[in-house]
Image 1 (tube, one colour):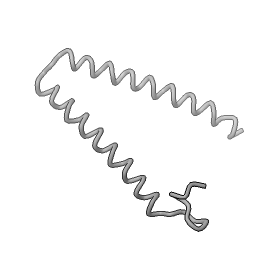
Image 2 (cartoon, rainbow, N blue to C red; image 1 turned 60 degrees about the vertical axis):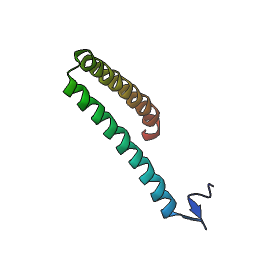
Image 3 (cartoon, rainbow, N blue to C red; image 1 turned 135 degrees about the horizontal axis):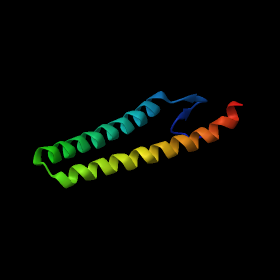
Image 4 (cartoon, one colour; image 1 turned 45 degrees about the vertical axis):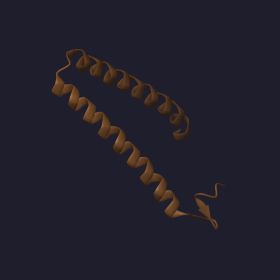
Length: 80
């Protein structure tokens, strides 16, 4: 077992909490930066960038749907 999360046959909650908070902080920074960039695009009124943003959103949705399908197909046999 990994020594970072397991200590004396129990879970080291401090390490686990620190890891999760680090992941969440990274997500907040990433999405905050994206919101800032997209707000700047809206403010500067770059028409072609607005269309690009819609394309990126559509691609993200398609990738998400593929991942949901793949994970669902893996889980269905375990539920039956």
